Image (cartoon, rainbow, N blue to C red; front, side, top):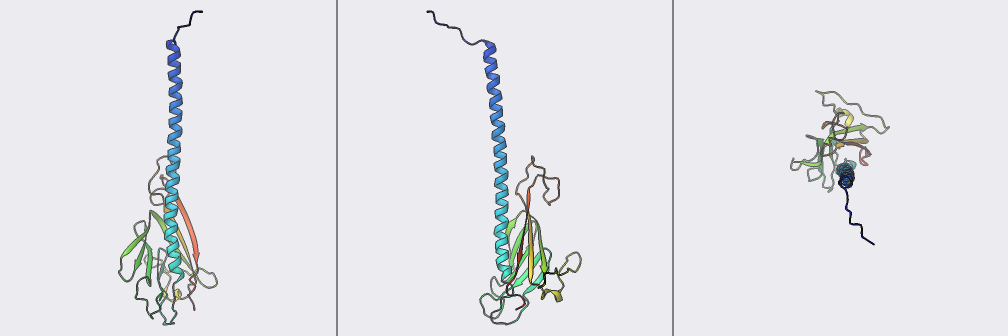
Length: 211
């Protein structure tokens, strides 16, 4: 029996090349799509972790506002505005709030949550890529304490600060990088850019206020 020595025809070769090219392009598209999805998920996870670490620290320190074991007597909350709060606590129980970690300010500066210790006055970054930081203050009955509009600052008036019993903290953060394939928000949190944003809110009850 004579062996069949015929090879592939040119048409068969071209069809095989086209099929291979289509399969390769499809696999590449799937790979790129998966990479984009993974990158987006990674950015969102990093953003949320970044915000949670900052919020946990703010919660712990704001909760200690007004700690005064020696009943020395001092203003527990010095500044209470929409984007900043300054709290005091006599943590080492020496009768003053002049030591490290005892007079702390949290504020929003250039899309960054900053923590400033009055001892050195240096603003340390807690979390970056922040669209907004908002504090809302409530009295013992759960009523929001009104702001006063002073040059657009919106502070809680000094004679109302002693009524603060609860602080609601909201942080709106964005991803570090913009995704051109995502219809989301711009760098300031307005619709129309490629950033993903997340909003987290916690309610804090400083256990030492009003004692």
